[in-house]
Amino acid sequence: MATSEKSVMVVGIDDSEHSYYALEWTLDHFFVPYAANTPFNLVIVHAKPPPSTVIGLAGPGIAGAAEVLPFVESDLKKMAARVAEKAKEICCSKSVEHVVVEVVEGDARNVICEAVEKHHASTLVVGSHGYGAIKRAVLGSVSDYCAHHAHCTVMIVKKPKIKH
Image (cartoon, rainbow, N blue to C red):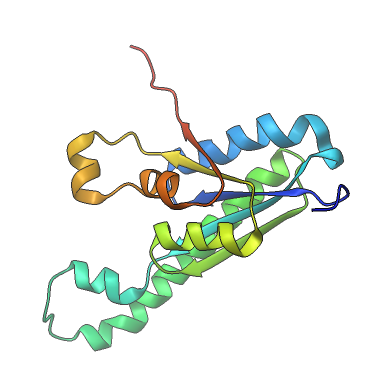
């Protein structure tokens, strides 16, 4: 890599407060203090689930699933657009203007790891939902998967718990 080229940092986001926190934390710690002289190019990636997986979650053999598919697809596209727009707003509020936001259809684990490869990222940042062992085992953990499969440094940002 030439010395004039910047490293790429990929941030994986979904529509959760944990992922938005991870994005804000990343901007605060790696981008704002350096403004235009940041050592990274920023790529934000959101994985839009395929409509068939959403319909599949409702159960097999749903009558009328074919008729519902266009509505589910429309809703998923709207949600993805909202997530991308919020990510851009967060970047703008932190004075980070040179950012690429991508929405890619697929499983979040694969989409994020493929984005790392595509952009030759040196760092991946993901948020942590803070699931316990049982929820992680049942639902799967995107951050855990990425930590084991992404071919770069992976930073998992946890939102601090509020002390009562």
